[in-house]
Amino acid sequence: MGRILVVDDDIGVAKDIKDVLSSSYEVDFTVDGKESLKMLMERNYELVLVDVIMPGIHGIDVLREIKAKKVNTKVIMMSTPLEKILVEKALQMGADDFIRKPIDVEELLKKVRAHLPEEYEVSVEEKEAYVIPQKTDVFEVLSELQKEFLEGKMKTEREVLDSILLSLSKLLMAERISVTLIEKESGLLKPIAGIGVEFKDEGPFLKVGEGIAGKVAMTGEPILVKNFEKEGLPPTRYGYKYKTPSFICVPIKVRGEVIGVISVNDKLSGESFTEDDLSLLITFSSQMASTIDSILSRIEMEELTLKKRMSEKMLTLLLSGMEPSFIYKGIFDFVKEFLKSEIMWIVVEEPGTGEFLLEYAGGVDFKKCALKGVYKGLSGKVIYGKGTVRASELKESFSESEVYFADRIKDWMGSPILLRGRHIGGIFVANKREGFYDTKDANNLSFLAKFVALALKEFWLHENLVKALDELTEKELEIEELKRKIQPV
Image (cartoon, rainbow, N blue to C red; front, side):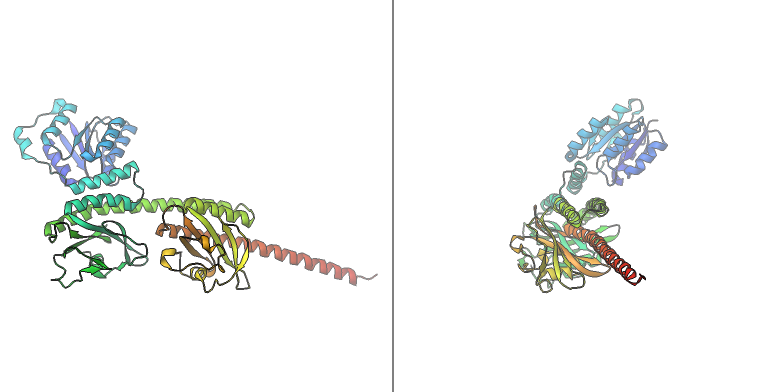
């Protein structure tokens, strides 16, 4: 009897395929791509049926490993119509065949018989007894998103999520949909994607526990509001008047923890949302959670990779032994490359004086000079603040007394420089070449500020050491002169 391995993250589909084939074949199944590779190493399978898109290790990855390790088995890829490009890629990589989802039982048996002809025999009654369920448009949309991941077409998490929210808005016939995630540091719900929603970096933002979305984020329980007025809720939010009196909000959970919410309102028909709409959104949210988790994991990995590159480059600069001006120029080159900023300047407190100096400026004509008005100005709010500040968070401008090129500054952000817990200055960047500074940029600038602090420490240690050596030499010369004078003639 031929042995078949079925690999599909949807356990219902995997079991149904096994039931269809079990009368004529020995069939194993798994919902995990990684587990399938282990099973292939432990047992001999004549045929593998593998889903193209799965969480973690995709079907393409399974196929790649099969070919790399020269496993002697036939491979049939299972895919939705939206995954055409991936199927073509799989066939180029050596897949033997493919089958479309939702799977037609007769086509499944035909495909299996074509690759294992001597073992095939299934009755008409058995064919009719099984109907493998069709995935909804929700699953197809998420598969498309996974394809975007695999092909590297996505640019930002917002762009990717917007594409699937557009499809969700069509399914629910809703005009406005938004996805907000909980920012751990502040406890605020901040939007990352939406349809029919205008986002503003400066907010206002809901707190966890505040409003309908905040309540869902706090309790982890979905809410369906069929009529605002009957339930005593305001028909407006932050100046926006809802077009229909109904609203749905469901939590997004990853490994049991609420990371955000999906909110839907303004049904195009003018009617209230129904329990069926709520059920669909809950299903969508549960499937979408893994997608968002993958997005966030990828972003986190990219940020870690960037910080690793930052660390390597900054440490190389610090260990180079070059003059401060060269070190600062290296930092500015880094800012231009990674923060896409046209201007950078560093403000430092002059030791022992309490005055501030413009230590370095890149992207403008630099002249080292004392700065006035730093304490009371915008610079002081950054230098003595708790962390990186963006222009969107402080509705103020730099004065020419604290920054002589203030008229050239548009969008900006600044981070305090701390040495042993003491605020000694600040690093500022301005005029991002593409878009505006976001939270990721702010985090990277905070990280960079730590290296600037190390650089300043090295400069000051070197400067003080040279000064101390000069003073020691001077004292030694004075002692020699005194010895010469007191020696007897």
